[in-house]
Image (cartoon, rainbow, N blue to C red; front, side):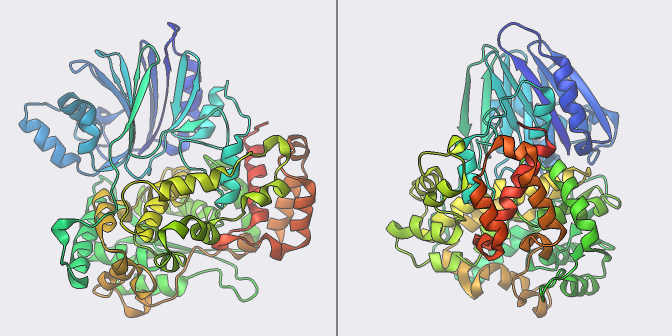
Length: 594
């Protein structure tokens, strides 16, 4: 797990090594254990290292194999690297290290651009093929590892975070009106390839991009489940699907144990993280370290779920760490979390993940987490009703359940200088829901949630907050084989029992009933959810700051109306419209944009 950066030049000039060095310095938290720079003619590569697999210098990056004519920087973990290494060795290849980085290089030498299809894991890759004079960029199937791009005539820069590209300089930092429309529509989600800034894009998940030395490039999507029924599984009943999902999840959890350091678990006490603990215990992982976080309650709303996390920790005899933070800790934590955000993220549990990761990183370098299960297995409240919606009414029903604002409301929110003239968010959702494949309406919704929304909400949230502390978080529910299996599973098995039915059936074989049958939980942070107390003061200050007034993103009348009537600020999926506005301004000001 690491931070990567680089620059390619297409105009005959030398890449700016100082710019790459600045990007690499900005990525230090992601890789505190080492650094490297490699100049390869028209491409310069930078790397920050977090040692997890092969702790020796032989696995340091950038890695070059002169005999193969290849150089590489890579962020992530290839879980099947031992199997690939054995297969490649049998084909006649030799290795100089014992980790996964060199396996990627040799896999490319053996299979060319199709190498990425052999990789099981999470990754962002930048590989230089010196003989073909090509730069190959790739991102994992679910977008767990980020890769940001900044292109100008004659030059391409890339990095693991958006702020790293800002440190390199010469970036168009104007606000992208379409991205702003998405941000305000979907509780701060801006799907790839856009970001909130016009001059920075991100490589979409499951995408391979090949860039020639003259600047020409091409992209292809190398993986995309169809969300249709598999004829080979016709006739499977609920018990058969339970067995198949249970086996796939066990494989996913075991895969994510590959490491030369201990692996812990972020234990919220919810179904998903509790299942990971149970399955690790089943796999004979003794004295597992688990971590939970809680906050002060507010107006009858609990600020922690320690009852459930304690129950799971006791049941499986884990080395459990319970972390409690008061309101006095929150505002400084918000500021630190905003500084760590690679993009503005309005989910109220971002701060919780940042604080939790800080504590976890003191004990382990790697942890497993339950992110993704709701999107993959229909765990959100809107999934069940949408299963019965006629296909031609699906976009309207999804918008009613998921959107924070209709397009018509945008005119009240955004200054005309930043307004998007069309309903770009509705158009994008309609296009995804209508795309080929997806047998049913719910199949189409789960495909949209998993492959468009998820990479830029919970996945991005976990990566940026954990890597800010040099903590590698692995997500078994986003295992490519498990996701593909779930996509083929009839929706009725997923919507059963109020959602995630097939998972709950698996869980009943390994967890106490009280954990399986509990109400759906979340990372509760009441002060952020309600934007009250010191958090409200912080938001008010940000929206009234000179930088905000000079930028003029939002209409003052709208901001004042939300401040005057907090109930009006509540939006879909528990988000808060006032927090969205304040968070965006805080992020822009923190990163000195505009």
